[in-house]
Length: 477
Image 1 (spheres, rainbow, N blue to C red):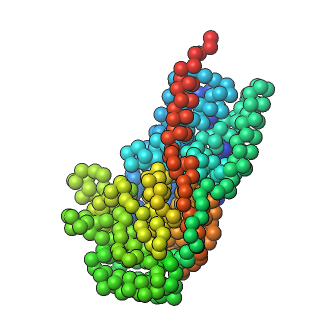
Image 2: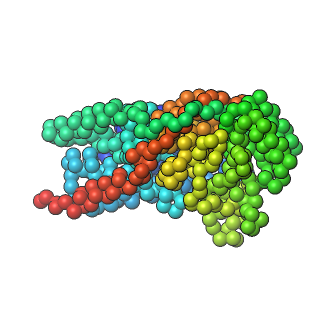
Image 3: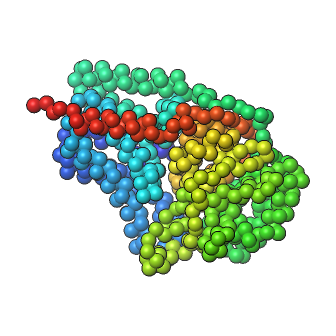
């Protein structure tokens, strides 16, 4: 299943793999279904998130025991979700046949992906819908979001299972379901749901490519300041210039003169500088914000709302927190931002901002889409080395642009920096691990896609009703 996602993008594996799970569940007892469901998802996440080893052990310098415990814990939790679903479906869902494989099981998987994406902060990674970002099924993303695409991927999986073991009538229904889904996807694919507004704006996305091992090295600090200044200088005059997450390894209080000089240069050139920037909490002074600073007519801040557990905060008692500081991170006491924050003004446009893996939480961004004309994501995927993590994260960013019908400016410290079009297409990218500046002209857009208007609730409610029907359906003798 991990091969269905970036950078491999073997989308058909998501269909066949899920079909295999459905077939295994077909003849299983509740206990067997729980076991196979656990192994299926645990294997997917063990293979799909192996890069956590690099961030926790190689970069974070955590003890090997703690590294293995954290990775195994994530895999076990993800597997436990599917185990619970497998047990419940086998134990309580009464309906069988094509209705079970084409509706009930797909609804259960889609609902599971939605639930694990927010419960206890959630981990919305490797949802089935991401695997079909480059197929006609992506046409459903602006209509119902990634979990609607996940549901349809699972319907196709159920159809494959039905074609293998169903009767003639059920096989005809399965063929009809596949045909209807893909024909509708073709009709929706590349459709414009939002409207262009004003003239295109010029952008410059700066990729410093500072290795994570050197980022917090004080001997590297001045060289990093010079690097971003020198990369930016030839592109002053671009309407919007974007630097990545925590581009400069110090809170804003220590960079007043440097940032003032960059702001002055930008204003004199007609540019707005948007950068990922740390700052201390104005109220406490002892905690930090992972934030975006937009230097337009007036400075504006966006503070990261979704903090990374065990990296930006420790969701444990203090005595455990002190022990976990073996991770040796520069700042572990981050404070989350407010749930509702306005768009950022930049060169006459409104930017809908996200930091790092915040863009994996699609519903968090719905409010700002009512005013945003462009999206911006600043990130630092250098934590994960030369792994699939940055490719998976870029895939997620592309889905957010597609759902919103807006161009996204993505600035990543060591890549993959990109300009992502309103259909989720990669318009331009920078190679990884190389300093550089990505330039282009992008079209601001207004209006709301169907998904931006209603969010995940239609697919969630539909899945709940399907499962309720499967549970309440009278069992035949």
